[in-house]
Length: 559
Image (cartoon, rainbow, N blue to C red):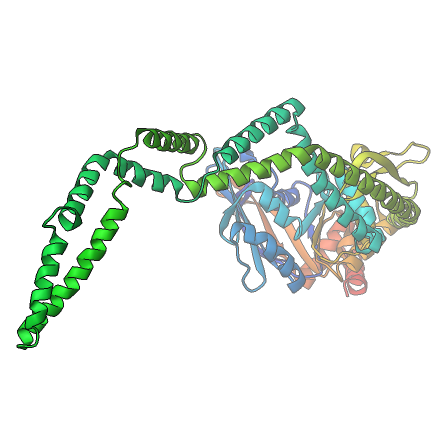
């Protein structure tokens, strides 16, 4: 519910703050007093396009603030939406604020956080609706299907839930098909496939082993120094084993000599043992040198083969990927792409087949949904016509037109438009083209009396009493009061009968201050209400009779 309305420097209002109550509240006042300004202010606060002409003369900006108290079920719903803008809800309070500047700029805020106008509209649509001239809100044609479905309770039905599940799959698959098909070029795919296969063949033919490139590098480095290595190897072998007085012969001679002295003392024994060890170590070394004598002889042909292999490896590395591991990864990716391209056409055909199957299922279930809507629309048409008749609109013809769409959407395959005629003998026409402010308000009143809502937002009715009086006014007032039992209702009215049904009464009036005309508003006491209603019903007199009549109406209707 709307708890507080604050308006500053807006049109003829300098500063106005009203504490609002639950239930049914009326705004009354003389013609031109500024009642419509209140509606305009609320409209701007909930996202209507800013208009700098409403900024009060001599001031920089207008401020309109609406403070709402929301129930827990509404809080749960809005919390998820407000998270998009990092907005928190504290104590179940939501504050909508709009600042309109004299240069045409405007600022929107929710709970002190700046938001764009579209987001403000989105959130406010769950809190309040204005029904009156140029305020179609829920009655825009795009929402007609939602109204019908709300009456039916369609969104909770098994058929609709199944449809939504199928439709979600259909949309997802359609996008996948569109993306694949739009990117599909048979000749290009063929060229890509040929290139990939060539690359795979080139890499596979290399038959590269892990570490092979490093091994070749080492071998070539050795080959570059092979002459020196061979010379050293031959010279060492000659000294160790080859010449007449080689190292091994000399060591063996002294080893045998010291072996004869080893028993004389420990020092000689130690020398003998070490000499013995060194002899066998050097002997083993000489064998190893002998075995490798030819290994490091320079071989020009072998070097050429290794260099060619090394160049080929590096060419492949440069062309595709540096290093064995990255080349293997590149090769695997190429295989994956080949598989993708080879199966691309099959994948498109498979998706197309799945879409065809989904389309058939959607066709059947959407036809079932259309049947439900068609069956139930007649009930709603009659209920609305009956409700409007009790509101003084007895010659109304109301048709709900259901026609097929060219494609599916998240509501099915139906286009729903309300057609109405307010005069006997006239053809029904689209609601938006012929309804006046008062007719819109009374239609919404009838609609809300027929259709309940999970979220009971505040309803504002403007010009609801246009073209009615007497008994019809009584019935309008009673219906407004009935609706206010489950939601807050605000209504601008010129009819005393309607005003008498309200629990709360606000008078809007003009006053002169320092040569300025200002619009003010005040909450009326019980006595003030009697006077105001008496004046509304008989402006020419303030007789005791009219006051008594007003008192009786209030006593009877406002309980």
